[in-house]
Image (cartoon, rainbow, N blue to C red):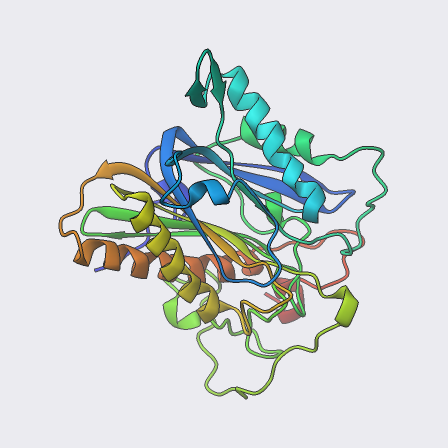
Length: 330
């Protein structure tokens, strides 16, 4: 039986913490996942417009197999600087990959586009290094969802997006997902309150509205040409012992959860990406069946986390899209 973890957050995976920082004037923010120790890390990209840092390093054939932290950020290409703030702070803590008498923190990151969401983007200098530093400093086991961190300024086709998370426990293994939802597509079925992820909801975690009874499979949101710059960026994590190749397969499987929760997903205008993290606390009971089940759980968690992020979004001055709660009176 699969059930949510005690927090229903990615931090139900022991040894992981999450920190958020946001700037409400700019309508943007940064989210950091950090481990008590380095963790095996991998990545898989399905979207057509990704923005990333250090993702080549996460291929199974590369020298470095572990990361110190993973960063999700708003700000498009400017947001890649958030990982620099995280790396600076980790280096000051003495954390990183040893090279001679130096340590180099391994901090891969990914960004989403939130530059035309109603916020004031006329900053005198790039704010994302500062936000990355602030996010790492705030890292805890409990954290808020919705209009927080990298989800602060996120938008989807017809609503505000947001930061979501969910977890699942099965046979002693824990899997969690963390996501900043900023998709070109819809997370709900047309203009109804039902989420595409409703069949996978656990314990009423995103309103308990239930699935739509019918829908038009040909209906997709209109594309706004030059204004369409999106991306859903996510992390899935487990406490299992995984090689980097196995973690990569978990990231691949997790994309199924994105496709279940966003209609359509993985478009040419989205930079959809999933990182995977494995802390290595629990050995695999079966070398084939257990990783397969972990991938299934990652997809399940990611679908739920996407709905939770949009469901939890809150309104703010200058918004260009309504929240799910505002539109549906919840």
